[in-house]
Image (tube, rainbow, N blue to C red):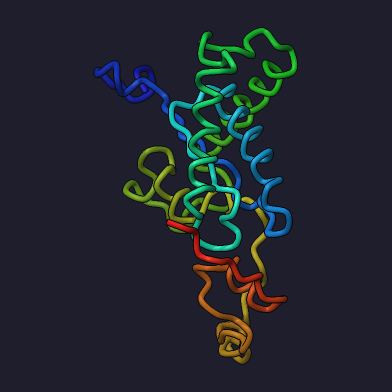
Length: 198
């Protein structure tokens, strides 16, 4: 931020990372096992240096979490913070060959992406480039074209004859904003959950 963009405020140089445990790894069956999954995912986030953390509740795959599940998710964070010692050092995994090698690999691949965007190369390059469309080394165009998804081959364009069929939603499709719910509704129904005692 300082060297590339000339940022003056030191606070703008910081990289702050928020981590949320993977809801896609939770299972409806045997939800108590999700406590273990959330715990080691949260530990991985802390070891990676996150500044803020969200731990999923064990029963989120069934619906809104119960009060007990939310409390367990909170206690998971508190135990990590106060009983494991991971907060006693800035970089607990510093010096690990494996972690350092992975970090170097991620850095090299990220810099390669940035270089491609800066040079205006790749399928996201505007067809009719002008001074305004390639400002910032093509960064804006990269975002508009869906980079890095634009790197993968695009599906063939539908012919005018079949365009209507290609764009019409199928009878089985529903709201795409909730793909998980759609997939679940086509399979066996979720088990009913009793309301928590208050």
